[in-house]
Every structure is written in structure tokens, then in C-alpha cells.
Image (cartoon, rainbow, N blue to C red; front, side, top):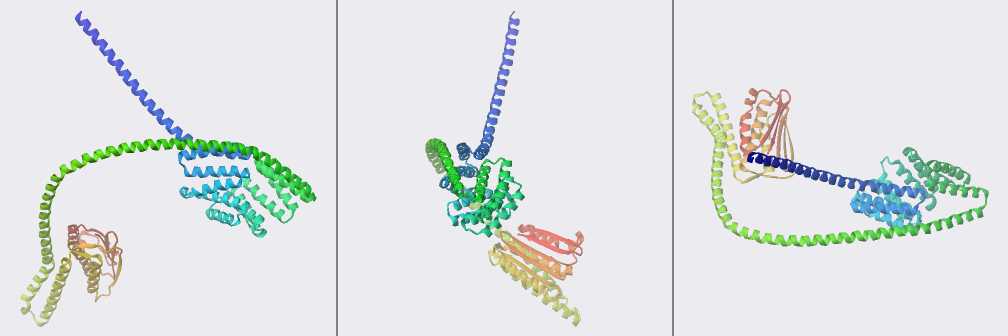
Length: 562
């Protein structure tokens, strides 16, 4: 009975464990699903803000083409709100271009100019040429209309400079059309105007945009009206009318109809009818603008109110941030106090460590001095000792030779002694100063190479570019000099070269390049004759990197990187 009860309890515990595991698994799955959903919502909201901005810009254009001015302004303001929220400079500029366009359609040219000048102020932070050309074009066109001729020409030329050497044919066509207007209506230079009309028509055809082709054609019609050739003007206005109707351009269609009617009146000679028709259109436009202006003002007021509310929220957030900074500063002060106490506790330990390092440094200095002594001894032994041994050997046998041989030995001894003196001077030159400049090393190499090849037909050329006259320690400079000596000696003895080039370049590091156009070499056996092992040993001692390039018949090139 007790066993069965125990088994039952154990089974119940197993069931409870399984149930608990399922609950934990289910909760973890819920957490993952929530996290994925949160990421999806965040990414979707970021994507929607971009799409929404573009949608509002397109909607503003469409409403403006349909003649719904107030709705166009509403959409442009919505686009501006999104752009300011996302802090996108290019989108803010585009928004002010649209808002200015709406004000222009309402004939409020001062507000339009203000919007476009505001867009210009932001161009420096955008650095987008396509936006620059559009802003300059709008400002230049409007300045022409409000009789600011100098400013107009300035901005139109700036737009032309931005578009120079580009394939943005639509913008080039539009710009030349406006310049044609400028010379027809402002400067009354019809010849110059016709040049720009031809350019506008050419670029419109290249761009393949029917809308801008009709716009360029309208300038041709205005050109003939300015010449009082109303029959030709009527012909081109009818072409513009058919193009606008085919493209669904309501604004262009209305403008073309008005100009067709005006040219028909001019051809019939009924100028009074033209004046009455013009007054009718002006009155109609004024009534429409008054109604639209009230709606636009309402949308602008709403935008300013919402902007003010956003600024207040930002101010509240800044206040909260200031409080957080104050709290963080207090915590920092507490941390600094604790840190100072720790520093005081560590100062004594640091002093003892410094004393120990000082003793270690003294020991290292004595080792370095000993190493330097050994280096000088080795250099004297290698370069001076060998030469003196040869001199002693020659002196011992000088009396056993005939006169001719004695003369030859005397000359050889003389040469060896001179080499000993030269090597001593070079060693003393290298160790006499703590540091040697690159220019000193360069001069020394030039003197040595010229002396070596003085009585040969080998042509020497030097290339020197020392941007930074670095200082080299005596060990490094002596080894670099000896390596170069060895390379020059090899070229003299083995290369059979007609030309030897020595290049010295120094900016952040020193580079020495020695090359000849001689017979070159390839095999390891050849290398031994060139003393490569001695060069390599000296280079490794002071950390000089050597690159050797040589092929039979192709010459030899050494590059030393110090």
C-alpha cells in the first residue's frame, strides 16, 4: 500500500514537471514572438515614414495639377512635418519647394520667394546638385517675374552652371525656356531669346517629356507674339493646346486656351474684346484665390500649432535630460572622491615600482653601452683589422721580391692604408654623434660612389627627395652605410653595368634604392660572391628590411626600408 502510494506521488511529480516545462517553453516562445513583432513594427514604421513622405509629395503635385490648391498645400505641409521629424535635409528642401509652388499658384509671390530662399539656406548641408539646380531655377524664375532682373540672371546662371555637362535634359529644357522668357519680356533681346528657345526645344526632344516639349513650344508662340506675328503665334499655341490636352495637363490646357483666344482676338482686331476677356479671367481668379487662401491659411496655422506642440514636447524631454545629467554629475563626483582615495592608496606602491624600474633602466643602459662597445670593436675588426693584417703580411715579404714586385706591393700597401684611414673616418663619423641626419648619410654615399667609379665609364645618377630630414642613431646609420657600401662594391666588381642609380627618399620613413643595368645574377652560388649573407646580417641587426630583385641580363635592384 505504501509502495503504491509512493509510486502515485512520483507519477504526479513527473506530470507536474512535464507541465511546468511546457509552460516555460510556451512563455519563451511568447517572448520571442513579441520580440519579432516589435522588430517588425519598428522596421515597418521606419519604412512607412519614407513611403508616406513620397506619397504626400506626389499627392501635392497631383492636387496642384488638378487645381485643388488647398489640398495641395495640405499634402505639402504633411510632407514637411515628416521630413522635420526624420531630420532629413533633402526632404525638407523638397517640401519647401512644394509649399513655395503652392504659394506661387496662389499668386502670393512674396511667400513663394520666402519658401524657396529658405530651401536655399539648407542646400549647404544637403550637397545634392539636383536639388541645387531646382532651387536656383525657382528663385531665378520668380525674381524675373517680380522685376528683380539682376538676381534673376544670377540664380538662373547658377542653375545653368550646376546643370553644365549633365544629361538632365528635362531641367535643361525648362531652364532655357525660362531664360528665353527673361530675354523676351525683361531685356527685350529677341535674338538671344530665340537661341534659348532652340536649346529648350532640343533638350525637350532629347528628354522625351511631352509636358516640357509643350512648355518649350509655348515659348516659341510667345516669341512670335512679341514680334507681332499673331498668325504664327496662334499656330504654335494650337500645337501647345493639343499637347496639353493629350497629356492631361489641366493648367497648361487652360493657359493654352486663353492664349489661343487672345491671339484670335488680336488677329480679328477686336482689342476691346481682349480687354473684357482679360478682366473676366482676373476677376474669376481673384474669387478662386480668396477662397483657396482661407483654406491654405487654415492648414498653415494647423501646421504651426502642431510644430509648437512638438517643440514643447522636445523642451520637456530636454528638461528631463538635464535632470538626468545632474544626477549623473552627482554620481560622477562621488565616483571621483572614491577614485581619489584609491589614487592616494596607490601612490606609495607606484613610487616603489618607479624606483625598481629606475634600477632596471640603469642596468639596461650599462648593457647597451657594452653592446655598443662590442659593435665598434667588431666593425673595427672587420674593416680595419683585415686591412692591417694584409699590410703586415705585405711588409714581411717586401724584401724578398724584385723591384717591380716591390713597387706593386708598395702601391697595394698604400691603397690598403688609405682604406684603413677611410674606414676609421667612417666609423668615427658614425659614432661621434648620438644621431645622424638622412641628408648627412646621403652626402656620404654620394662621395663614396663617385670615388669608387671615378675612373670608370659607368654613369652615376642620384635621386633625392628628403621631405623629412630624420635623425638616425649611430648604430643604424653605420649599418645602413656599410650595407650601401657593400652593394656599391658589388656593382663595381661584378655587375659590368653602364649605369648605376642611387635613390634616397624620406618622409615618414627612409627608403634607399640602388640599382644597376648590369649582368645580374640568379643562383645561390652567384649570391655568395655578392656578399649577400653579410648584407643580410647587418640588416637584421638593426631591423632594416631589404628587397633584392635580380635576373641574369636584367640588372640588380636593392631596396632598403629603414
